[in-house]
Amino acid sequence: MKILNSYLEELRHHLPAKNRDDIIAEIRSVLMDMIEERNPHPGSEPDEDLIKAVLLEYGPPRKVAQQYNSQQRLIGSHIFPVYLQVLKIVLVVVAALNVLGVIVAIVSGSAGDSGFFVTILETLGGMMSSLFTAFGIVTLSFILIERTTPQQWRVEIDEDWSPDDLAEVEDKKRIKITELAVEITLGIIFIVLINVYLDRIGIYYLGDAGWVSAPILNENVLRYIPWITAYTVLDIGLNLYLIRKGFWDMSASIGKILTNVFKIAVMFAIIVGPAIITIDPAAWEALSFDLSLTAQRLSGQMNTVLDVLLGLGIFGLVVDSIKRLVPFLFKKTPAGIKLSTD
Figure 1 (tube, rainbow, N blue to C red):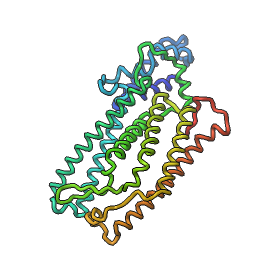
Figure 2: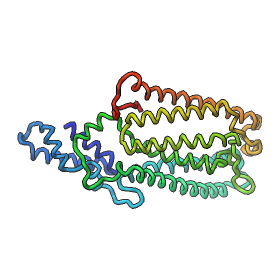
Figure 3: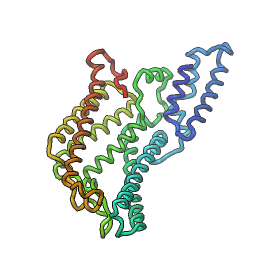
Figure 4: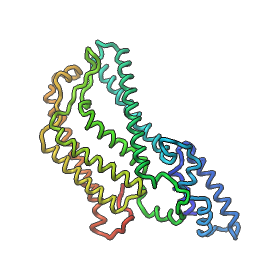
């Protein structure tokens, strides 16, 4: 029954999360009845050819799953469950960051003059704007995913599928579509943030005229923006390729190694280059956390922490690249065989 379990597991990946277990149980029962009815030796273990014939008649997993997914116009039915998961994650994070901002303003005392309720109203207004923007970016991201990976999400009527394909997939490293979709979405948000809203990365406090933003990144960071954007785009492209392919193959592993090398070069350049963080003294004083720590000292400490984090990032990328490089150096690995331990 291993091939039947593989079929149901493949089907599970394409079903809506809400009723997934009930649907799988229902389909398992139907398939077991079909197998039992056609078994020439009732009561005995059915042979694999019989199970394959039943599965082939029942239909490809993605095509069967399509019957249980509601029709969606903007986001296709197969990708819609993943879209909802990613959207929830992003919206929760955005809302949490907005709430954190108002808590910081209240604790620091910078909201005192404007009043508590005014602060809450301004925060809610900013939160709604942020949530709307995040919703738009996530939706556009999934439209991009769906349009660029039609083979993964759309089922053709005359799709050439065989139960033998299930065994082939088991021998390869299956990717987790939800994780890749989250990475793609966050990557697009990150690109928009550093290229359009770079001045929004900073210290926020309530002044006499409302919320004030004091950027913490100075002009030195501008030289790195094109390179950071470039490797983020490469990451997005690789993730789209993986979603389309469905597993890690040799091309994906080589692409990941090259992207890691690119990232390491950029991170190293930031570490050895001029400091990119500068705290505005007026903004630091407005927060009123610890005036014994000057803005200049804080800037130095934050640049040191950034260098440490980048150093750890480089170490992680080196380890990841070595793990992906080992199969090429010490054993012959045909294209399509598992190359990743992620």
